[in-house]
Amino acid sequence: MTRLTIVVPAYDEAARLGPTLARLAAYSAGDDVEVLVVDDGSRDATVAIAVAAGARVVRHAVNRGKGAAVRTGVLAARGSRILVCDADLATPIEELAKLEAALDGGAELAIGSRHVADARIEVAQPWHRRVLGRGFRVLVRRGLGIAARDTMCGFKLMTREAGRALFEPAQVERWAFDVEILYLARDRFRVVEVPVAWRHVEGSRVAVASAGARALLDLVAIRWRGR
Image 1 (cartoon, rainbow, N blue to C red):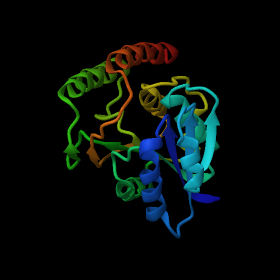
Image 2 (cartoon, rainbow, N blue to C red):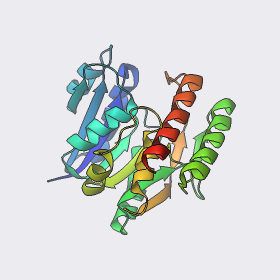
Image 3 (cartoon, rainbow, N blue to C red):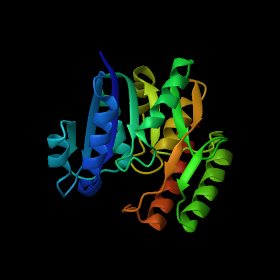
Image 4 (cartoon, helix red, strand yellow):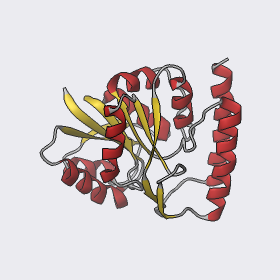
C-alpha cells in the first residue's frame, strides 16, 4: 500500500496549482507518495496542469464544493495515511513532519492549527476575515462542543481507517465540512491539534458573506443530524 496520499482539492486553480505540485513533488521525491488532485468542476486548465505535473486526477463534472472534493479524494486515496492540503499551500508542505509525528505518537487525526501555542502566522488574513473567523469558532465550540481552536485550517493528516470512517457518512459539501469531520470524530478517534506555520494567500474566490451564511446553516444541520 502507498505510504501517503496528498489530496489537493482544486477549483479553477490553474494560476497556483503548477508551483504547488512542483513543491509537493520535490518534497516527496524518492518516497512512496501519491499526489491526488480532485478537480471540482474547473473551467480553466486545472486538469491539464495536474496531468502534466504527474498527479493522479479525479474529476467532478460540475462544481460541488470543497467538502465534496475532499471527500472524493479521501475515499479514493491509496495511501495508508492521507494528507489534505490546499492548492495554495498556505501551510508549507514541510510542516507535514509535525503532523506525522502526532500520528506516530498515537493520534488518528492531526489537524494543523493557527491558533495554538507555537503556531506561526506569517501573513495575516484581512481584518474582516479574522473577525468572522473568531465568531465562527465561538459558535463551533458552544454549539457543537468541539474543543479544537482551529477547525478550518486546510492542512490535516489522518490514518486511512479514520479517513474512511469519517468521510463516508459526511454530508457537508462546502466550507463547514471540516467541522462535520471533527464532530463525527468525537469519542471515536484521537484528534491532536498541531501548531503550524501559515500565511494568507491572495486569490480566494470565496464570497465571504454568502459562504458564512451557508456555513451557519451547515452548523445547524450538523447539530441536528447528531441528535
